[in-house]
Image (cartoon, rainbow over all chains, first blue to last red; front, top):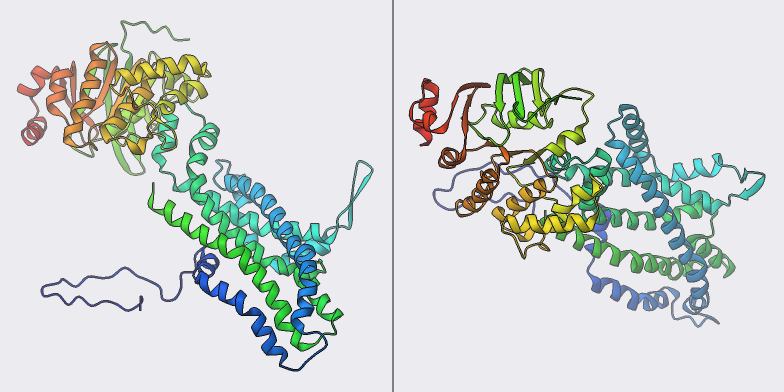
Length: 293
Length: 249
């Protein structure tokens, strides 16, 4: 396999020290995407096609009044529109907030003001490493039910809090993406801009960031896929997203064990169908931009 | 603010010292460049040539001494850096064009964004400059689509668009293929002929001999010898200069 060291066999070949390669899969920022994208597309199609058969197999041939599959079919529209689309909404909002905050945090990481840099470094390091579920619980319990702004009372429902709770770790990771992309631009670009009289701020916004936008896109999409796959965490906080609704649907159908595979399997397929194309596209973009520049 | 007049040196260096940590790169450099002069700085690698030229437009700071451009002290903390950079243009060895902008946009960017000039006026000037460096028809090409020599000429045009009084060239042909070196050198020669003050760090001895009014030879952070090319290349007095010339000529 890939880890085996090839031994030079040609006569006269000089022994060389091969570069150090850690064993096992690469645990870089793309691990989740790489894992997901490594699944052959055919498997997913096959899984979706075999899904009813698996359900039937689990149910057995016993003639029930209503088979689990029929029960699922009845619930499908509800689970998709009320459940999965809610997950998508949570992920899109969390990503939007996380990106906006992360962009500024990332620029703060490379700021020339030492204090700002230190504060950003603490923020990014802490929230990149804190478990997401712990963070979600903290946000849920620490934030009030409603906030009063200028005498107006704005309710803060649980799902908004989960959006905030998910946006925080995403912003910390996006900050690292921004910092890495900015620092990957050769310093010569900064010097050229400086010699033409550009200020530091002009250089960042007009010369550096436009160049690294392409480089930031693949890791950004990578984090979006990870975030989307993490939205079921919200079900533990009582938010009515797809996993919560699936559980409730199964309870409504009498909590029968043969419902487990069809109902959770359906949720799994939805996530797979949504995240798989993103993962494939991410890796393709990553490969394309890795070669250029 | 300054009472500089054109009969005084446009660039004036006095006892310039510069070190990177413990390493002293420049150990007392003095130099006078008059308006319209072409100066070539030559010397073995690591002798501080590039550092010297980068100090002149404040890309590097100095530890001691004085550098004046048109009577303005470059390393004065109160210096208006934009004013300095309008006066001093710089061209780099690796061209350093902005890869996300076309040739024309590269040339237009600084006057429009930094000097806030009207884009229409700048565009006319930029097109004329690209024509001057013989790149007519390449306006809409991205740097990645141009050869090294073409990119370097765009970089020269980009620098000229700021209408500088002095141009600094930092080994601008060192990264080029031999056949494209000439086209860049011709462009610089045209500039010199028009009376632009040029300070070049170069390894092109033939070119230095041809265009320079004055040649400086640096070694280990000091100017060993300087003089007009005719004298310099034939009657070098210092042993180090003679050794170097023997190696490169």
